[in-house]
Picture (tube, rainbow, N blue to C red):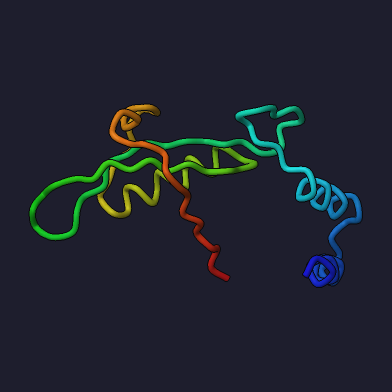
Length: 111
């Protein structure tokens, strides 16, 4: 699979230096909670409220945790998705008391 990605990158004439950087970032991701030397990946958390389905007018608290290379882009994307469904972002930590961390949900990127 990696070889097919490298071939695709070469077919669009991606510079060799950028390709090598991408490979090294993928081989050595760093979790920002532990050590983010080099600024490669950051774990960012966003708290929010989104409306429930139906006419009840209620809201549900959510916590979105992301792994990103660009915190500004990610913040904009999360804010856009929250407002798109009628929700709102809250200050980080606002929903923490409501939740106990028990698992992860992976969202596969659409192609």
